[in-house]
Length: 517
Image 1: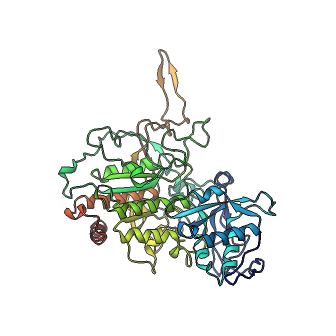
Image 2: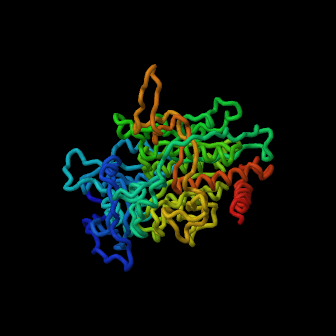
Image 3: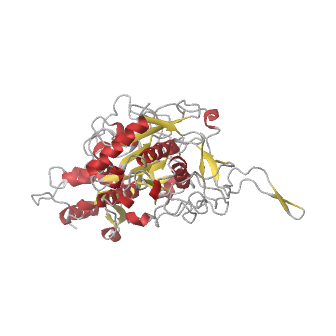
């Protein structure tokens, strides 16, 4: 196939990476990186500035984690035949194409291009979305393809924001810790999951006819989904509409194995619970406790190891945006709760103009509040999307970044902190719901006599339905639930979300009430 051509139909010269630039003074050091097993599971790699192909414009980058065999392109740009031809021709020169099924797949926001070797070519290196992206941007300079190429990106890995013990990897597996300090094991020795007994009953839930506002606020939780628990069961009287079917947003998490059923997907023969199994159910339970009159829309985008592929997040947010645009009061998403994040390689240039930021601004314009966890790496390096709420150049939208507080009201040692962290809420030692189908394998029982089952306290048997967990993952839904509780009592205006101006004003007032000292 002929090489790429510019708008004058003249062959372009071969791609030559620009001269490497020295990182800016004070640039973060190379991170320890995620485990090799996690990278292999998701076809990912760590972008290390000293080892990666330089950017097409020669600007220094910071560490991040991305899927090496994919790239993201907006659905609109992918629909442009001329730009798609440019993509094919440019990738063809390096011996790669993409899965032809990508032409027929994709969500409302982005298409994920899965790079594959051409059948008649043997590439001289493995697929690398970062290298291919820089090549595309370099060859697109000065042509009509420059703008759509700039909108393309690698597919970052995002990670659920739960805290855990130091094991040689970052605090949250996969997060590239590049500044801050190493935390002593003692500071994190009690932050993991553990089963607990809860003797209180489910918080009472008023019938919809008894609500001041006339309808229940809807909290969209983009996470691992939601499992079985009596407090969340639609079959229980008074809870019929607590969980909302994700199909109302046109969403299906079928491509992601369900972590909320058995909890152990990575090593099923061992019976151990995966690191983030139960994450979504735990968050739904937080909403149930704080805002019992609200509803939860659980969209499954997170794997059981806490990883989120950026393309899934973007398309889920676009589905929520389209649901808001429809303006139907009964399914209008008032609040979006995000307990995940990533570190951008060029935050000062790309994060604030990314597809992610555009979707969040669109949600804000529709009157949808977004609450995002600040992360658990004890660093001031901006974590996205949370850092978008504190961006000096960002539009005035209801996006709140939440750091974690200890039970005594102090700021948690693991929580990220910086000028972009705008709110603090309880996140350490939170008690909430776990799927009653979870029964891990750490502590075997003992059969005595008839038999009588005796056993020690099993730290990963959650068949009792409750547990304790720690992280900014849970500070974010605490704030989201408080916001929903305020909305449930804010008056008749909640009946008319069709009007974006009224919806935005309603959310603004509720935020003011929740954040008032």
